[in-house]
Image: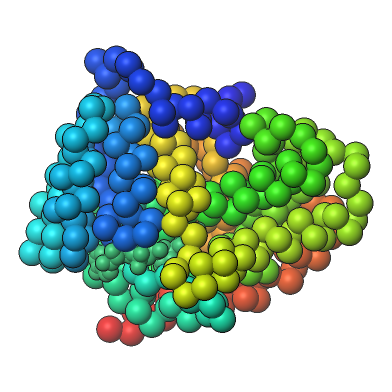
Length: 340
Ligand code: NAI
């Protein structure tokens, strides 16, 4: 099986040139929050993706400049920029995929949950518009706290009567990207061939990398190494927030991860078989209504939520430990969406 989570061709396809777009169907991708720290490099990477025919860039400010800039790149997609709420409908209409990196990022000392008060409202209003203007689009939620913003989106879509659990994704790809990088460094194996599933959620201890399932297998890692790798993956975002010292959180690596995940969604829509990525989706593999795990992507979005596979004792403990926090973040999102 061509597991795209581990395939170096995923990376290369972002930069593929001279690609004949005749065989690739028309696909419109919208980025909401496109003028932000993530939005700008994500717009660039999506402009390089030959599977995109129309790139729609939306933000409350600054989008005309980003769109004009990116539009000069000589790749397949047409680019349009939209600014302000009155243009949101136009930005969304006909979208196959909507990627949402809109909202405020963390500053040192903040948890992702500290962003809830601002970002929950932003996500809610964007999802109301998605339900109205492109109810069939796949939604790639990047805005934090993902553990709550995905349940908010689900509730908003349910109220609008447009909810399709196969089409809503919390983007946890950056956790996978980090786990792969850190594992490869520690195990001293070439990073391009590394695969590590990351399950649970997208905040602190809810991020559970399954290094026992990492490939290629490394026999040189001790239990202490695995504990340290797990902690570094869980704290990867905070590492960047602290290094940026008040200037935001991960943007470049997140744009890369977001582009990888959107590319996987596009491939799935286009009928490429065996496209598998980890994502935070509606799930019945644990007692929680949403959970991140490997997901097979297809023509309608989620084709299959894959199980956890065999866990080490350390991972079983991690799973047990994360459930209460993830549960309360999910419930917080659901309560917010239903209170007004
Ligand atoms: P940023 O502040 O640089 O950019 C956010 C953009 O959103 C700004 O351009 C702003 O104008 C725009 N925005 C605000 N309200 C909006 C609205 N109602 N409609 C459309 N756009 C709106 O922030 P950055 O660094 O790009 O981060 C964005 C989000 O992504 C944050 O919530 C951050 O926590 C999250 N994030 C998620 C990660 C993940 O792994 N899922 C990783 C890193 C960040």
